[in-house]
Length: 154
Image (cartoon, rainbow, N blue to C red):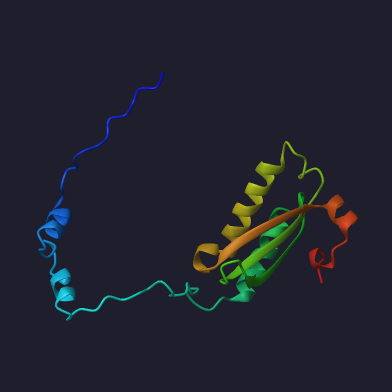
């Protein structure tokens, strides 16, 4: 039988709640008082878009992808990428990676994909891009059946 919880009737006041209850400015600054007097206006940052930190050097990304593809060559057949908007409308980097059937075996798939993602992110220096990255994987036999041109190197 579960033990009933006792409701919390009191809470420990901190400086901020004490200042609000007493209608006093926060002890560290007086911005609340200034807002009440109409001197300081608050801003609404709800619609501020997330913008990448700078221009993206596509040549560096391409070189990094080629380096990763060569380093992962036994298991990776090809790595393709494209810039597109994600579901939030932010420009992102989408990777399509075709791997061998051996690498796509269920017992190896997780370890393989994690290693590939880590290598690609390291080689393109993803932390410097300011872009969200997304990865999609497909086995060689799956691509042979589906034959989607988007997954073929152009």
